[in-house]
Image 1 (cartoon, helix red, strand yellow):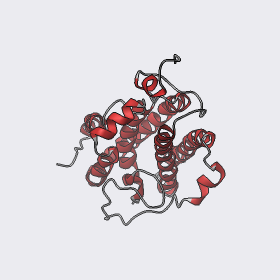
Image 2: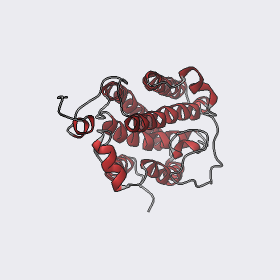
Image 3: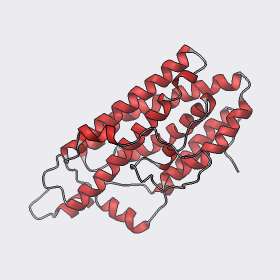
Length: 253
């Protein structure tokens, strides 16, 4: 950044920041919000899968679920450490939220967040059984792929690097979900799988959030967003729909 260039213009021109020093308050606030949403979603997601491990139909499936729990918790820890550099109380953070709390399965909270934490709304819904867990993971892993591709280009370089390191492991969670879904389909569970798709599809779709053009332009000027929520949601719908089609399933009308 040249002496004549303001920090705002530097970020708007694609510049990156590398440490918390001299980070503007509004940039810090938005960065913390982004990180909190990711950390809370990973911890809540891990808690949900932890409850379902022993419903796996075999040892291999239980190992896969346990691996997802471990890795999601590790991903949360990586980003939480960056939050700690901005002053977050990392020791208290992971324990004071009710990560296992869930709504009633038929409640409809749309895209709103829980009063307890910043997890995406989808992680407030309970997983009912193994098939339900596989389908939820199948759909959500595709959403995470789109979100991480976006967040891997944020202007805070340490966070962008963390997301780039996390992305391949999260993608593997999707591979594990597809492997489990194929096995379920082969065992004649297509009807139950379709019911799970009908339940989780709209809840995953809404996790992208709506679009506020003025807010999007603001975030883009900070280098914290490049693609709109609607664009990410459309990419997810196309990718997830193709996966479902290969399993003989379809998105709800």
